[in-house]
Length: 296
Image 1 (cartoon, one colour):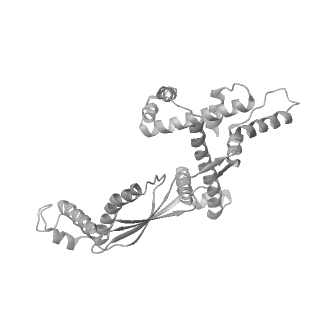
Image 2 (cartoon, rainbow, N blue to C red):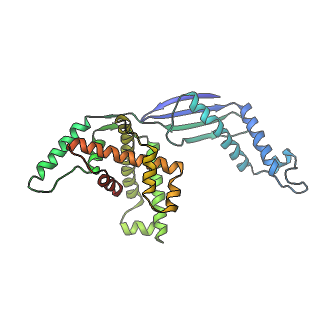
Image 3 (cartoon, helix red, strand yellow):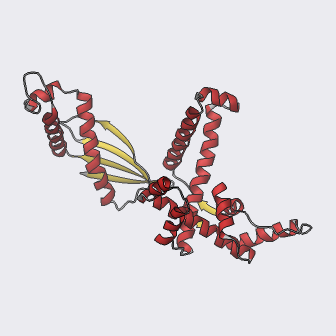
């Protein structure tokens, strides 16, 4: 296997991979043999037809597609490992062509963790809180920084470029959620857009901005949680699950994926609480802050 690595802007890398024809033929034969095991052709018992006949009768598009998928499953991870890359997204794969008697060439574009620099955010958060206090001197009730304000300040103070690939993925997720919600209401996408007086282009532009802001916030949170050395224990995760009350929902939340999500929510809330406490110089009610963040 030959691999050419090219660094792109925004922590993106392009891998140009050439798999030698010998490996292509080997994989082709393997996929074909697997197909033959389940093939049902006239005059033969299931799985007893000759491989050559199975190949002749096979849908070439499906056969070639399966071989390509298997080749990518094997050689894409190898190329990534050989170049010590740590992708944080699915690759964007381009295949020049496929012939079982030729080298297999593909290009995989991947996104990695972006580099970021955050200015003196703690000083700026304190300054912002003092501004809020000065603006509300005539009011008796206490004023506080809100989680939204903290997040906005952090984003404004951070130098970070998000890979276009990640933004595209996030936009697609946002569109998928929107379509599901619209369908649940019994509406078509066209009717929804008319009701909002928006075009697809306008909605895409909004989603792009929101996706970029959301991703920036996620990377900033991850960076600061590590920098602040915030550790979330298994007991804390279990306590949050137990607080749900509903047994069915509690069982769903105990899956590994859900636990990772819950851990991230607790960590983000803990970070926001810590930053607000330090900026205001007072103890903040964690539960109130978590409620505000959940509403956000």
